Length: 400
Image 1 (cartoon, helix red, strand yellow):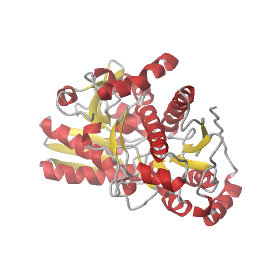
Image 2 (cartoon, rainbow, N blue to C red; image 1 turned 180 degrees about the vertical axis):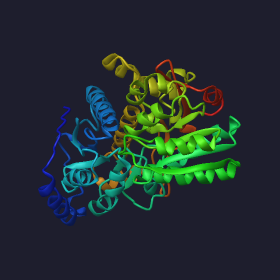
Image 3 (cartoon, helix red, strand yellow; image 1 turned 90 degrees about the vertical axis):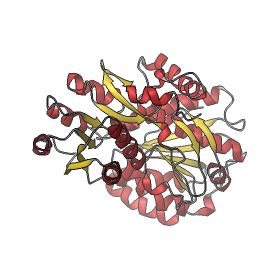
């Protein structure tokens, strides 16, 4: 049985509830029941600026849960998912997370695709001792210092290194960067880009923080145009990316985006101005162009049913949601239990191929994937296609 609930408490009362739940949640409620459905919690942005991320996550998770239950469930039991909307608000995300973390019926949680929100629940994952996989790329979870927090999306540092590898291969010698300093995704991505560019001998001529809530970026864009870099890399999520694309169009300078834009929810509103924009993405995004093999099979197993239901290829966020639920199911099956500690231990030793790459978690690696799980794609005829750079890489470097 698939059950999806959207729960939105009032802000005033919910903040108090969050504090109370954080205080009372503990390891004593750490074992799910041994009968009935296996309960998984999900907190994602279904409204607000980052809604495109959460909407893709939600639809993918629902598709995967329906498939899993139709195939007999997990450990002979149905999988039941409760989905809460965090409204792209960090306090709301913490509230929703804490409500489920403190409920011993929940075996595990998929936390928000909003990086700041997932980062904020780290201490609660530890205090409630509940295995958690972030649907956002949380760099702080990568090193395993939080025993209960993992991430199933390539972190900004990997995206930055992959982007700079591509730029270097294309002969780029100078680069402009714009980023949001108000979100870990942007700030971590910017810092990693600066380090990778220096190592590659690429000169960063503009390094500009921007307010993603703005609707006019001409001041930052004017600085970039005046500097005349060989490329312009933007670290933002949400509507700002489309505005920047339209305002930067016609500059003659290649525009580079990140996985936050690897979706038709960017491509369609960007329109003609988005044609030719290059971006990093999950390797699943150009899945139709992958060579035959285990990874292509894993991508197709999710993408083909999605295509039938949605008449469009899955966006990056859908692939992320599918991978998140697949990893939790693999851990529960490996543990042969819904006990939180056993599932956590199983997660930490997983070696599983998903549509977005092979995850090999360990005690000191709760990120699990590397640069081979990242592709470089471009907007072409209103769709996302692999660049010649990635098509060449697919022949020699694929997670299998």
